[in-house]
Image (tube, rainbow, N blue to C red):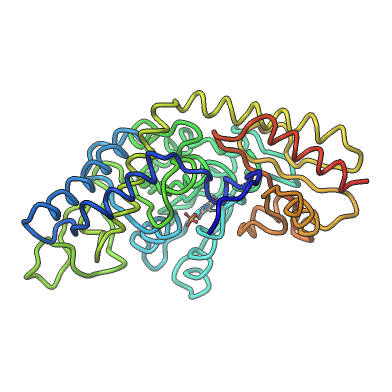
Length: 385
Ligand code: PMP
């Protein structure tokens, strides 16, 4: 693989570039450590265990969880969400999800429901392409909660536009009704603040590889105090090795098999970089790029932006008369990386009204510059002619 000149505007898929501190940490683990955490009493295994613990601590501190023990690792956000959904639900439960969920939430819920094990309903965050107000979202949830509702799963931010959900308010509602609250923070972690304890979240699912600037191959769940789930994968973890059962206590209860240690090494450094830059600065920078893109794109005839008033790191648009995949392919030829078509979010496309042809998504990160936005808009101008 060679280093190529490109304008990378697909940070919602995975962030790029990664900070050198991240790639250095991955390399350092692979070259100089190499031990398996919890699997030996020699120096490199101890070092690996320390690395894992330190990353748990960093995550727990960054996301306001009670302790490092509340953090367990997975491979990605999808596995985190699946662990929480499958580990919590039982036959007859009813689940509420938002109508903008990614397939990482929708598909496990859909499967359990189609097998007759659970029942689910959606509440509206976007309706006919328009963002619903916070009050209306809460009112809709209240209307749809029944005595069998045991869980709400909700994304903190859409992956197809910059619409967010009122996590704090939904958390309060869930806590007051004894409903488990699982939050998909794939597009939120490292973009704006979230706190497990303050926002009354029972399980926060985060990826290393997006806003937290880490490598692919690692995700995490941050559990609220006292939250316990069934395990969905069993195996060795260096704890209670003579027992046929997984240990009772987190985090090892939920971790079976060797952890993605190189990715965890980079994950910890990614969090450090985000902290150093500061979430406020990141949020403001991404919103400024969004506003610039919105202003320039709206000046181009035939361009439509979806939910333009919600400002954040993701902008979704279409060019009249052009297929979104065709536009993305044209942009790729100009060295601009965006995504066309559908974005693994069946429900969100329905709510947005883009289920016929999808739309073009450009997503910004802290390392994007104004000139990247200008290059995107110049290319769109040419394509739209
Ligand atoms: N949820 C949302 C909102 C997402 O945007 C994504 C990734 N596009 C996921 C879940 C799945 O994340 P991962 O690829 O880390 O499993």
